[in-house]
Amino acid sequence: MIVTSQAPRLSQDILLELLNHVQRQSDVSTLMRTCKTLRDAGTRPLLSHGVTVANATQLRTFCAYVLRDVPNRAPHLRRLYLKIRLEPNVDDEPEDDSDAKNSYSSATLSKDTLRMLVTVLRKTTNLEDLSIDSSEELLERENKLVNAIIALERVRRLQVHSVGELTGRILDNIKSSLVEIDLHCYSEEMYDPSPLIPMAGHHRDTLEKLSGWYVELGDATVRFPRVRALALRSFWGLDTATLHHAFPSLQYLELSVPADLDAEPTRQENAAAAENHPWGVLRRLCGAVDALYALGTAPRAKVVEADYIGSYDATMLARFRTVLSESGSSHAVLHLGYGYGFSLPAEKIPDLLPIEGAVTHLALDIRTGSVMGAVDDVLSQIVSLLRRHKVAFLVLRLHDTLEDAEDGDDEDGPAPIKPPSPEFLRVFGRPRHEDIIQLFSEASTSLKHVALDVKGTEATYWAVERTGAGLSVERLSSAAGRALVCAEELASTDRSLGLQGVP
Image (cartoon, rainbow, N blue to C red; front, side, top):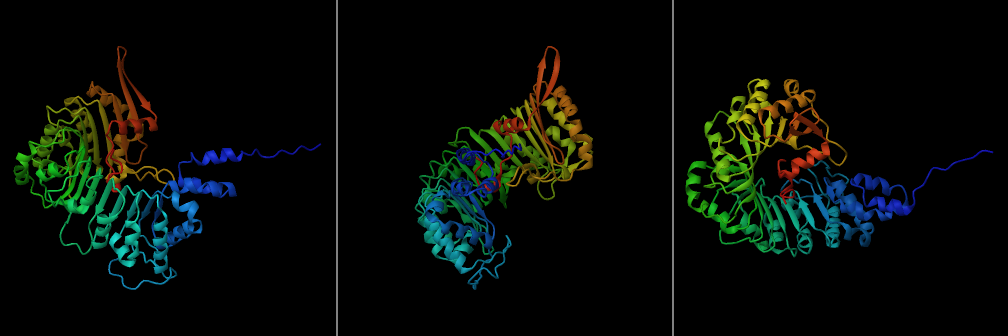
């Protein structure tokens, strides 16, 4: 007798439950293609991950998908990211997408596709997070989008690139109570920085996070009592008194890439106001060294994250040490050698922290291409720094760009490891990590945890223990190590997402 066996089959109840625990949107899509039951049930988890649209074809496909079954699809969309970059002043658009360019940087949208988008936005009544690249250019192509967005009532986060009259109308009239706004105000027709406070003023009673690019503060009379996180990126002017008045409840302050800032006289102008700030102890203070210094007196902060530290200029190091001393920070995240024309003499590494400083948790992000001196000297100078200070947690990242250090897993899997630098791998490569931890631990008796992240190698995480039997080091799992770095607030702030990563 021939016995045939059938492959085991999971019950539909198990498959349906599985859908609720799948982490990747692409995996949800794969499961939905296995049977009709999962195809129907997968709509909610598929859309709950959010939808990112990068070109005209994708936009039309997305709109058609929603409009085929509006009652069962539109209500589940919570996050929509329209990442289509448009050229300004395009008068004639095609009636359909047959001749449309679909590149990310220069997309052409048909009038038909834009009309579909208007209909979709009118139906996605539960939308909570909306991001629009080339906002003004998109709204100029289809004015009905303005009222469709204004009518949304549940949006909590709004991110727009290219702010003009039509986008301003949305900011002033949207029916949603916005909690986070991220404004990229740069456009090719920009002549003056945009005033941030008036643009966001309509939401002063609900707003908790505000970030602006290519802005100035503007009107000093409006107050935002609930804003706990503020980021000024590519900004003009720095008036500490206005910051205090407009944002009295800050916990996070970021001042990145100041334009035409003369740090010393600005610091003197802000000195009186700085003595009476209302913030208590900030959770995080970050940005360019000159901007933080120009506040007058740096506010007290648990974490200081400083950009653009390097060059031969002793003034910059002195200003940074002043900021660190004034803030009384126990945690410091330092980006060393980043910025055009910046270099990092290896012998300056031990001088980064003030002698009487309180830093116990330290992250060094070093751009390897900026280092002046032998790679062996970098290691020995870090050892010298540890001998001078009571560092309990050290994170060392060695990369060519800050983006390298911030790369993580993407939707399609782990980010590829980029080609290594032979000299840095010789000194800091994975086979030497345990020896390096031993060397660091002998230099600093207070050291308890170390993370090593070197371009071209797998990051490793270590715990250091001292007992009567001597010194021992234990390698932690990658998941545990990453979680520990984040818990200790030593990860770099991802500024590409507005203030999404800021609590």
